[in-house]
Image 1 (cartoon, rainbow, N blue to C red):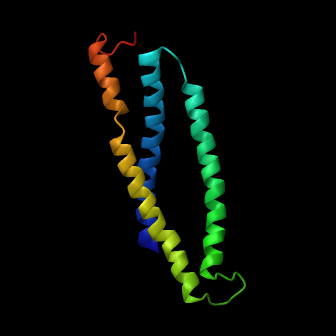
Image 2 (image 1 turned 60 degrees about the vertical axis):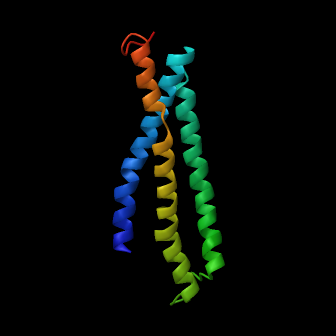
Image 3 (image 1 turned 90 degrees about the vertical axis):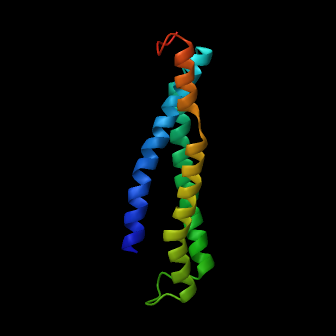
Length: 126
């Protein structure tokens, strides 16, 4: 459990920072290519996504615990409940972390911004 907590926190922090930076890079790309500022909209949508995801994620945790047979009043949980807790704590975050890392890697917005800058006055926003 401690290893899973350590790994999740070590991987989650940089990924969160990267996602926020990508929101800003995407907004910059729109400014470069279309001359439209959408910074506020981009960060508002990102914030709404985080809030909705947190709410939905909390509901899913309850549903999965119920599916695993978790009983909050039991002195000892069933093996199904313990397995579900392990799955939710270690396996699901690993799966989502890998998927998110792949998606972030495949995003080429930073490369597109650099290419645009090279074509248009070496980094000056026109």
